[in-house]
Image 1 (cartoon, rainbow, N blue to C red):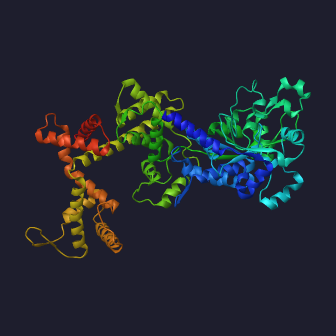
Image 2 (cartoon, one colour; image 1 turned 135 degrees about the vertical axis):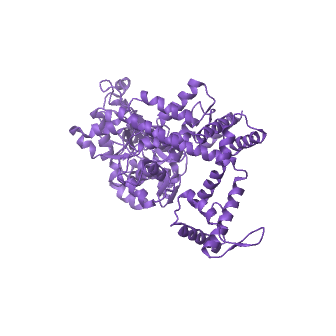
Image 3 (spheres, rainbow, N blue to C red; image 1 turned 30 degrees about the vertical axis):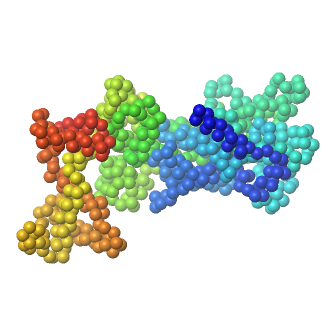
Length: 631
């Protein structure tokens, strides 16, 4: 009964939002809330803004797109700032068809679906409320009832500009039903719905020989011609084409560039002039955002055809490339898995990350800079610190290729390979090696991979495998460290004591004998060498540490294990190096003694409790790392 009660509650909430009145009543609403009269483009832009905006040094992040689109922040910012925002301000881009262009499975359809679903929900809010002439199949703007010669006065009084003319059907209704009294025309609040064909339309071209233009613009209702006496009587016309039904909102034009020319010219008239031709009527006004999407190959073919030149200048082409960040690619896979039937399969830690590494490598282009490898570039793009590179270097890399991310492996391929592995082997748990093996096996059957691509992709799989080997070793080594944070803190405190004595040219006191002793150069170098600090650079590094400690002290903050990233990395590596032999012996012995067995169980428990493994995947990890350390 809970679900039925919720349905009833939702229905009651919807009933509260219903509103009906006359044009006179609607004008009273506009005096209090002039934003109700916004255009379709303005409504979409305000909907996106309504979701919230986060801004930092890298740019703006529109939260409306969060949880659905990952790693496309720059493309989305460009889309909003270069199209939706100026179009909402009635600038010339409003008169353009928005064409999203990008590779398959790059997020174009998801973006359009998000806009359509979002707009449906937005019309249930006060800010996004839409009012229309009651009974109009095109849910026409009530302000079209204001006569042309009074619109300047109306704009002065209300601060609202009216665009568009009354449709033939409502012009006839005004005379026949209301005796020309516009103030009495009934107005109602409407709610967009793609299912009910209200304010949201979708057009998908089919065979050009059989598809009728009526799918876009409506058609004559021959059953009523006898009743109304003429094909030019608007009551004998079905205003049920996608352009009619999408009025006031969004129309998605799927595979637009495959469409017959006669369909495209209607779109040009609509975007450029705000009207389209239908039946034996004058031009019909419509206010809607036309959004289409295509892939790069089709777009290049389209623009190479001279016959399409007039259409080129009527489009705003927005590239939607693949994501180029590992962490965001992981989120894409996680989302796709949540929506599938394999969500109950255990996926060992780092599995999706390693798959993402391979995928991102296929999408990146080699830099012309000699000191930057694809691997370094991949980590820089993911926001990680790479020694010797700054934010300026990152921006320079991003500016190097305008089309980076427009090719490579798509997310669906990765999910398909994961699914294939699980189904074929009836597995309940998979790890990074399973996925890399499956990705490799699937390259032969991928339809768009050339022989040259395959050779390069196999190399990328090897690179991802090596990165996984390092991750796996670190994971096991961490788990082997008893009270890891405490051990790290003890080692770091010891190091800092020695650094302080070195920089201040003082001596330390032996904690047992009390004797004075020189700073332990061997200890300090054993830690610093872990991160490549040379003999010549050691003094500068130690002074930098001391300056950081002083800065923390001045601010009343405590300098701890997490306060200096490079020092933390050095401490970790030093601990791991000291434990390597223990790890190697324990994981590789076939007949562990009682002490080794106890340690193994502790490590497995840590991997399960702290790192998200199952006991089975933890055991697999230990065996694999043991084999790596014994090579």
